[in-house]
Amino acid sequence: MKQFVLSKTPDNNGTLQLNGKDFHYLTRVRRLAVGEYFPALLPDGTETVVQITSIGKSVLTVKTENTFCEESSPGAKVCAGQLSARLILFQALPKGDKMDLIVRQAAETGIAEIVPFVSEFSVAKKNVGLAKFSRWERIIKEALQQSGSKTATVIKQPLTMNELLEYWKTLTACCNGVTGLLFHHRGLEQISLHGYLDSIEAASPVLVIGPEGGFSDTEVALFMENGFKPFTIGDTILRTETAALYCAAAVKIILLEKNSWQLK
Figure 1 (cartoon, helix red, strand yellow):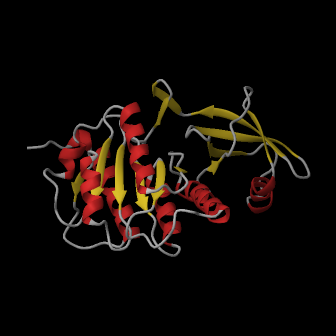
Figure 2 (figure 1 turned 90 degrees about the vertical axis):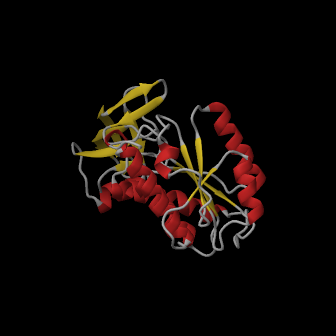
């Protein structure tokens, strides 16, 4: 366990009580005792070190000792090794259990927000049961704990295409510099991915990935009418679960190395 993801925020004294699965994991699986410390991630993405202060029959009491993040701007915390840019994934729902893999890889890659949606070629439907959505949340928590990612990934309930575009408008209205990037295999881009990302400072690159079969021509036109920038990586057609990881990794590497490259 590289870190433990806390589901609740400690009180003003830094104290928090854990029970249920959290209690079982820390006391039965990890076999931690009173006085021991472990690294943790708060719900807002802040790193901390937690000490166990007491263990009852079914409740564990902990206290946060310190945090390692500084506020780069009001309400925005940036930790060492973290991007100032906030990555968002708009993922068209794939068939079967592929979304489980996409969710896990997105959390490990440092995606801040996953927004599933139903596109024209999506086999899956919008209505996702409570059990499946809870499984996605559990997968995210496990991925964050295993990978040590300092980004507190969240996932939204699936949206329709119209709802997705309304959410996109909300993002662009509230946040300066949000850039929508539409992954498409037809090579419609006008400039390079580096060029698209050159102007991003502390904003949100929004990656849009299609389902099996990609997007229809109507959907591509709709995204571009709403300000999304098409881009292609390589000349191969990727599976949707591969494309999400591939594109997120490419964008993250470019942003992490941004200060060391120059556009010609």
